[in-house]
Length: 261
DNA sequence: TTGCATGTTCCGGA
DNA sequence: GTCCGGAACATGCA
Image (cartoon, rainbow, N blue to C red):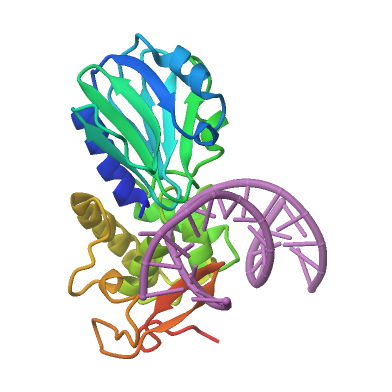
């Protein structure tokens, strides 16, 4: 699930249930998902503090706690679950934040994500690695500037977190489909018109998806049909094409998204 | 049983 | 340095 809109949803969820609450302790049910310290270390760093207002950068959820900061990356299958009653955790609840009034649980079936700790004064980029500007705030001019430095494919460029943060496989395909750009076109070869379109569709898709806390699998969206057998373009009805681009399964419309020779 | 899955990282080769 | 493909990570599902 987790691309920018999903993490934006987790940010709101965190703010709703965890912001302002006192942290009593942390249970690392799977210690391996505490990535840069250990369970007890995370607990010691946080106990007695309160979670503050969370933010997001790309696919990272950033939760400061009066000095230290918790950073969560959701990998492929991560999510947050709040419970006011202390019941038996779900088998995939890997890390449990015991808060005043309930528990916030980090759940992750495939365990590609995890929780990191940035101690007071440590730059967050030490944890996240270099990240480009957040995709939600990149304007047309900045987008053109970033892409102009890339000779490789447009899909690979959009998904490179060091260039632009927050875009993954589904989001890149959805945006490129709307902008009618073939996923393996050169990033720095787009016309002004296509760049305008790409920027416009990027912001439309992100703004709309953020409200859903996911890319809507609704009529008129590529994401709604991309994984069906024999899927057709919601716009023109052509049979959609699937193939590996930039290491991921890309989906595009061969009629609307032509690749120049 | 096999292939595939919305993420990142590392490695080798062009 | 750049870019790409492939493998690895862990687990479930069609």
